[in-house]
Length: 234
Image (cartoon, rainbow, N blue to C red; front, side, top):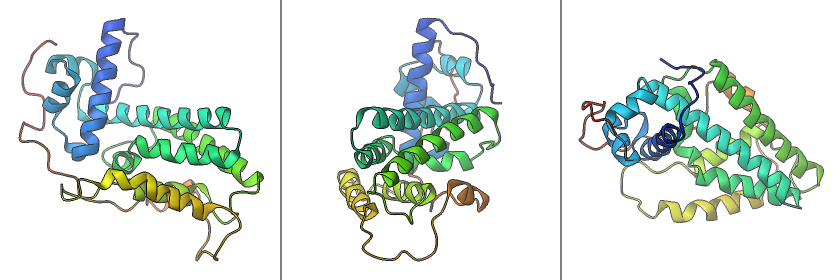
């Protein structure tokens, strides 16, 4: 069950909650939605009972990780627009920040047991969509972003380029992410060097098609159980 408005927390409880969300984000990047809750609690440095006090089940935890990542991306876009004097540099900065948030590994969480109509997710999505659309509009108005690209094109490319390869066979994958993103961003600049097939795609069109990005199998989670089994206090 996903709770919409958690009660105000003491400072230590808030730190625990933030550590759990951060640990869950990293575990979900590595192992997908079936990450062991025992492992998440261990990474967060809290007891299993502490995790359950904050999040009733896996679904609620994934819900709040998703909100956390979307909020951070929106903040990255806002900061880039505020601090960068050049509109296309703002776009570059946001795209590389999105890669650092590992959106390629996390984007499918919205499709794995999430309620896309949940008010918190709708609000977070609207905020993020608005920021991305604005940062692209700024770059387009500056004359540096080609006209045949929309937000959907951008985010599908970013998620595909930042999605880890399945398994452990490409340990050096991360070192190529920002290089490949830079090549991709260079291709978005004017003057356009080719005519793109098809038409520009918005995020709303992607959602109507239920097509976020191509998916890849997640790595196998550690052998520790898939749920919280002990009752330590943490």
